[in-house]
Amino acid sequence: MDSFITDWPPLAISLWVSTIAGFSALVLGVSLAWYLARTKNRFTVILEGLTLLSLVLPPTILGYYLLVALGRQGLGTWLEQALGIRVVFAWPGAVVVATIVAMPLVIQTAKTGFTEIGREIEDAARVDGCGRWQFFWLVGVPVAWRGIAAGGMLGFLRALGEFGATLMVAGNIPGRTQTLAMAIFDAVQKNDFSTANRIALLLLSISFGVILLVYFTNQRIARRE
Image 1 (cartoon, rainbow, N blue to C red):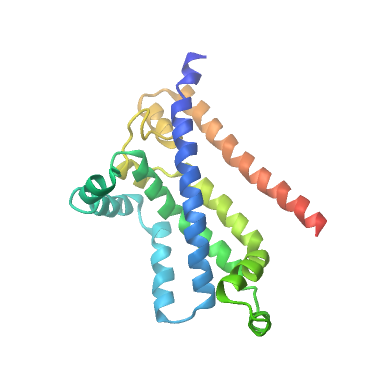
Image 2: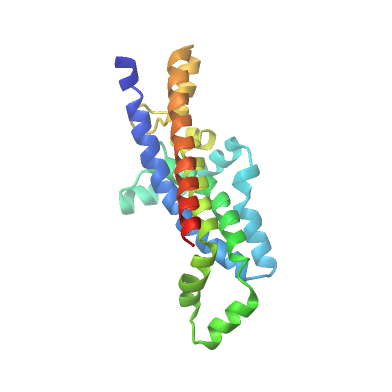
C-alpha cells in the first residue's frame, strides 16, 4: 500500500502537464490546421514541415534545442525576471515540451477534417455575408469536429507519454517534474520491476480509458445524427 502511494505524485504531475499541454496543443494546432488547410503557398509547405519536425527528430535533439532556447543563454533569464516563470527544470518546461510534441498530431487530424470543406460551401457562406471567423466557427468546426476531437485525444495521450525531450528540459525531479514515464524509467534503473509494472499498468489504463471514452462518445453522437 505504501509503495502505491508513491505513484500519486508522478500521476498528479502527469495529468497536470498533459492536460495543460493537450489544451494548448489543441488551440494552437487547430488554428494552424485551419490556416494550412485554407492557404496554399511555399510558406505553408515550409510551416507544415516545421510542425512535423518533432515527430521525426530524436528526442535528444529536440530537447537540446529547447534547453538552449529556454535556458539562461536563451529566453530563460528574461522569462524569470520579467514574468517570474522558470521553465528549465520546472513543470512549465514539461508543458512546453509536451505541447510541441503533441501539436503535429492535432494539426494533421484537424487539417484532414478541414480539407473536407468544399470551395462551393465557402463561396455560399461568403455570399450570405459570413466573415472569416464566422465561417471558421459556424462551418469549419462543425464539419471537422471529429478530426478536432481525435486530434485533441491524440495530443493529450502524446503529452501524457512524453519522456525523452522532457527529461532534458524539465529534468527528473521527484515531486516537481517527475511524470509517470520518468517514474517507470527510475524504477527500471533501480531494478524495481514491480513498481515499474504497476506504474506502466496505471499509464496504460489511463490511455486506454481515454480512447474508449472518446470512441463511445463518438458512437453515441453518431447515432443521434
